[in-house]
Image 1 (cartoon, rainbow, N blue to C red):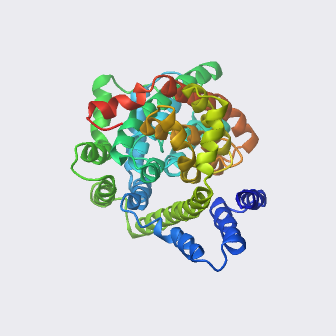
Image 2: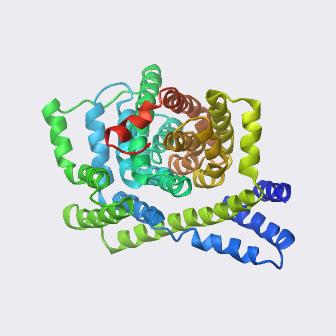
Length: 430
């Protein structure tokens, strides 16, 4: 049964059928051939619907909506201006401000493609105007947006927490410093590349006082991450409630403060958030059903036994899993990977002595690389549609940025306190 399930999945994916449909179709084939006439088929089919019946997962559509509202209300532009003011005239200054803006926006939306869509339309033309190549400008935005699912709030981490039984708040706290590390590595590599190519920054119009004035000007936009993350870590509200509060805040500031959020923009924001949320939920339903079929056949236990048989070294086991996820991340989107492989690898990780919270963070970081690597590379596709650069050139430009992100992953694994220090300081279980 398992071989038929996997082979049908690979065939449907080879036919360029969307991942969500491919997983649902392969499960349907197994239902008809192996579980026909038994109550099991009804129970498993219901998993497609009941998977979404979870309070933590309600945060996904609301965080999506926060991102789409910000991109249309003027808050995103204010964040970009702050990043530009902070980086100043350093080599690759606008590129560095792009990464800073991506990190700030990531602390609001939690979605990589949402970051590209919101910031790319503003930042890519601006970088091209200052002499950046269109391919590099688009790739840099796509790479910066990979931080979106790592810096809290994070949609993949919400899904991981539901599956692994860990605390969503602990996962959010653990993702903060690794996300900042990813951003710092990208800024460093961007500086080296820009220095070599002569990509210059924009001269500051003043000193520290002027930078602080730019931050004060963008206070309404910068206050939103503090509301969301401060409320979550302070125990004032849950991540789902924080997402709703973020939507209300974005609606209020976009309409009454910046006066850019009209009925037309509001309708477009709701439609885009709805489409993105439906895609995530559909993938989650198909992947959950797929995972339950594997669990019924005892595949997680068999895989764990085989991997432990190869080596009992925790470092070797973690390296094998990370290598596997690095490959699957190139072909399957982040959400599907989290749902499919968390039940498979979590028992191995626990047996090796690693924290489930640490594994959730490095797993998310690893899978984010798939957002800028073909054939999936969703961030690259969105950025390419904005920059109009040849896709093969964007892949070439992505290689050093992928290396920068990979170094951040390795450092987090070698020094786990990068991820676990903040949750421990806040008194959370890791």
